[in-house]
Length: 538
Image (cartoon, rainbow, N blue to C red; front, side, top):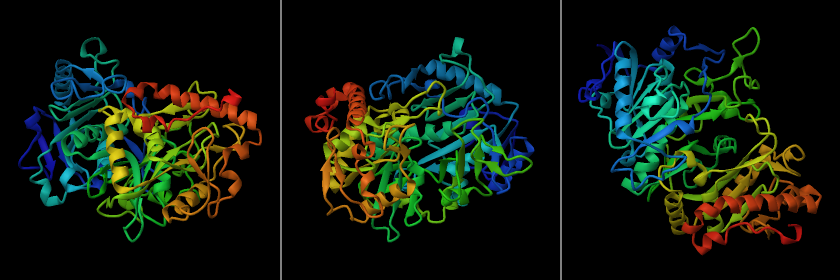
C-alpha cells in the first residue's frame, strides 16, 4: 500500500483492517480539485466552482438507512421507518465485502472535526473513493490544525464507496444502496450512491444520538446567526425549502451556521464548517451571499451549463429540483469564527405553508411552541416531486425526523426546558403562500419575511397590538415595520371567509391527525397548543 500526504502517527487504516492500493491523506483543496478533474469526476464552472453529477441518486435515500441493533441501541433508539434495524452480523458481512472492494483501489482520507465547541466535538475520519467527496468533507466539516493531524485519533469513521453495491438477498438491506450506522464500532458505511449529503446527514444522526445521551447537549436541525456585537443569538428551525439557509445568511448579522447546531448550558455551536445550500433558481439579487460563495473550492451538484459556456444555469431543473452547492463557511463574508454564539433570545420555526393558512409571523406560547416543534410542519407543492399534483402537508418531528435516532419527545423536553430557563421568544414564520393556497395566492415576498424577522429581533414587535388566530390560537401582530399590515392576517388576504375556514379546518385536522402518535407523551400544556377547527365551517 502506497501512502501520501500528512497522516497520523497514532492511527492508521490498518487499525480497521483496511488495505488499499493508494491512500492520499489530507490533501489540500487545490489538490483534491485537480484529482477530481483528472479522474473525470466533474468540470470547472466560470466562477471556479467544481460542478458534479451525483448519478442515480440526487438526494438522500431514507428508506435505505439502517442502524445496528445492539446493546447500545436496542432500548434507546426510536425504531421504525426512520431508524430501521440491521443486525451486527449483516453489518460485518457488508463491511468485510467493502474491505475486499477497496484492496485494489485508490482512496482519499481526511481527518476532520464535527463540532465547533471543543468540549463536544467528534473526531471523524472520512475514507472516500471519489476525490470530490473528500473535497465535500473538506468544505463541510472543521479542519484540524496541521500539527494535530499527526496525532489524530478518530472516534468515528465514515467509509463511502459509491461503486460498492450490497446484495439485498444476503446482506439484510432493501436494495443495493445503503447507509449503515454502527454506534458500538463507531462507524458509518455508505455504498451504492454518489449523493454526498449521505455523509453529512450520517454524522448529524450520530451527533443527534451521542450529544443528548452522553453530553446532555440538545442537537438541533437549525441555522443560527447573531448580532454584530455578538450579544443576540437567533436560531431558525425548518425543513428543506423553508428558507433556513437563506434567512440565516443575513447581511446585517454574523452567520454561525446554516443547518446543524448544538445548544449547551453556555452556548450554541455549529456542528459543521461549511454550508450545503439549495441552488434551484438561485440569483445574485435574491441571495447575494450564497451567490458570491460559489467560487473556487465550492461544489455545485446536479446542474447544467448554459449553452456554449461554463456558466451554471441555476434555473434548470432537468436533473433534479434538489440542486445543491457546498462551500466552506468562510466563503460567507460575515461568518463568525469560531462558529459559536451565546444563548439564543429568539427562536424562529419556519414553515412553507402552501395552504395559505399560517400567518407570515405569529408569536407562540410555550405550549404552542412545543406542539409545533414536535409537529414540524411544512408542505410540498405541485411539481416538486413525481405524483405531487396539489399541496401536501409534511410533518417531520423536531423539523428533522429523518435524522433523529431518539424519540422526538427527548429533544422536545430538552428544548422546552431551555426555552423556559432562558425565557426565549418563539415565533412561527410562514415563508409560503398568502392570499390563497398554492396556485391561487402568491408566495410571501422574501423582503417582507426578512423585515418581520428583523423587527422581532430588534424588539419592535414587543409593544404592538396582537390578535389571536381563531384556529391555531397564536398571536398575530397587528402591525410590523416595513410590512403591509393587510398581509399579516391570512383570512383578510383570502377575501372569502368560507373558503379560508374550509381550508384552515382541513389543515388543522391534518395537524391533529399527525399528532395522535405523540399524544400519550404530551402534557396538557402541549395539547392546549393544538389547533381547534372552526365548527361553524365544518
